[in-house]
Length: 183
Image 1 (cartoon, rainbow, N blue to C red):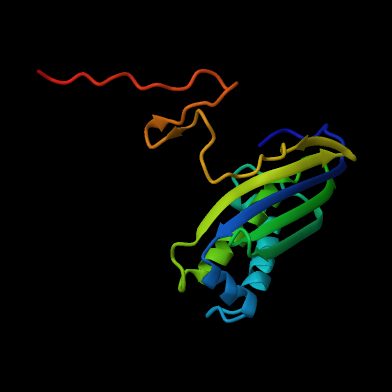
Image 2 (image 1 turned 60 degrees about the vertical axis):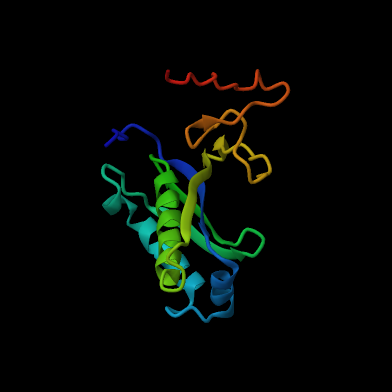
């Protein structure tokens, strides 16, 4: 646990997100309110709030944060075939509230999964991430905007043991060495 005795209490904020991918049929069950376990979005939002408030009990060495704001929104997105979760936290204190935001987002996403796993066990919790954090009104960190997803891995990234070649301006393309045949 970090020593924060001499750190002044200042206003701190954080935003985190998570996503749960699923089929359009499962997403329809959530939107239509026909999921077997009930109102998926409301339960996930409540679970996120409960988890965010208890982060200090879940994450070893996390400080207790006296949260003044903890908002969890779970929104279905048809185009992405996913439920997106966005969490905003705020407090006046000597430590940040990033872990509270991330914990709330992760637990809300796990709750969505738990509530739909009976109809789609292959649903995927993905992209739990910090979006931004600030202290005393000054933005300390913001996640850079992601380029549009083309559905293909970025060039130069290892995929199934192979490297996807770089394009023009991205360095020389990867060329595998010719294989030697055994005599």
